[in-house]
Length: 625
Image (cartoon, rainbow, N blue to C red):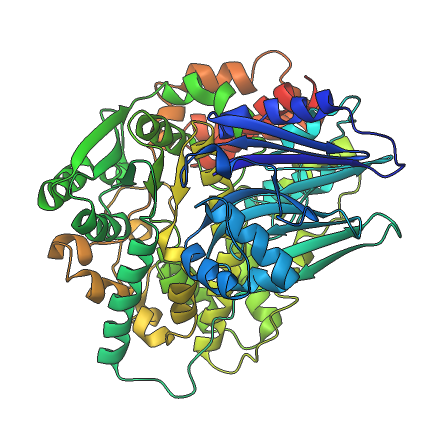
């Protein structure tokens, strides 16, 4: 696991090595174990190394192929690299190292971009062909590892983080207003845009080729999700047995490491099951949990601290267990560092993840995470019920689009933006939402089709946003985070698993809206264990019944109470007093009214408050630094 960066001067001017070093220095936290640069004429590659597999100097990067034709920088882990290596050796390749990086390099040399569909892992890479003078940028199927690129003037640059690109001398930083509007609609960015003009995030499952002789640039999708109903479904017992086999295989594949490996243990069934399997192979496995001080919590927040469940599972699986308890004020303490590492806000209130990675990195260099289980196996049934009753695609879009306005509705959005920008109707976020499905034209004929559409949407957007956050906040501490649920074979199985094996009584589901006021007894806070039925049945082989059958519980802090209680002074200082940077792009009167709705207890807008704090910090650090 590493950080990569590079620059190509399209006018043929030689690359200054000091510039490449500035780019890699900007992402040094991603690779504290070493660095390297490769310069040839107008091309420069840089690398920061976090040594996980083959700790020797033979695995250092940038890496050059045996025939000296290709140069590569690579960030990731390839879990099937041993199988690929054996296949390449049969083709006549020989290897200097035991690393997966060299396998990736030779696979690209042998098969070109077609090698990407053979890779089972997480990665972002750049490959320079010295003979053809072409660049290949590629990102893994699911977007677990990020890769940004930008072109200003005669410079084309790329990096694992935007920081590497922003380290270029005289790089112009301009706010990308449509992306900001997109963020404040969905608390996420669905497109390939970032909050900075000219900086683009290569989409998951894509590769980009750039011919610097002709100047031709092309982006190609090599993989996409395809949730569908099986034409010939198997018996339930067969699905259960196959899921068990594939899940165990996925976890065990991702245990490959030459350094110590641990596991997050949140108290939920996804991380618990991963820990259960991993502990069978690693008897001295370390596990990590974040808890919350609930002294001033209210409503459904009382269920947010899962330490007791995590401790019980740690005892069951005999892990060496570590915990950290977050209190009101911890968000304020970490916000500057968190916003700098996150680079731009994405889904959720991510600072607990920052502390989880910080704790874990003190003991191990690799950690297993449970991300992906919900999105693949239907863990959010209160979301999908909207889709089941749709009559056609446009009605489905209308209903689902309204639900995914996570921060403010369209009326409030226009009030926030219009006084500063004028007419904001030119950016219609419903079209952005609809365009997520532009390459997924499956027929919608029955309720299951609409639910599969929702699973597709959430994997493409919500899960991808979670991966961007997870990468940035784990690598902020030099920690590699692995996601066994995103094993290719397991994902393929999940996509063709019938909806009726994932969800039970969809029509009776009552949604959870964590932003509505009320106590745990109110109907809006009614929890359920309707989702992930097949996964629950499989996990019951490894977990206590109260975990496998537990009601769905997300990983969240009690900020709804903290923002209007112990942290109220911080919120007021950051958003209501003085001249916060955020009011250079948003209408102050409208935003203040929305913030005061939360502080007064009139409306729960904790996600909006968090987003405003984060964007304001981003503007201070990035836009105006």
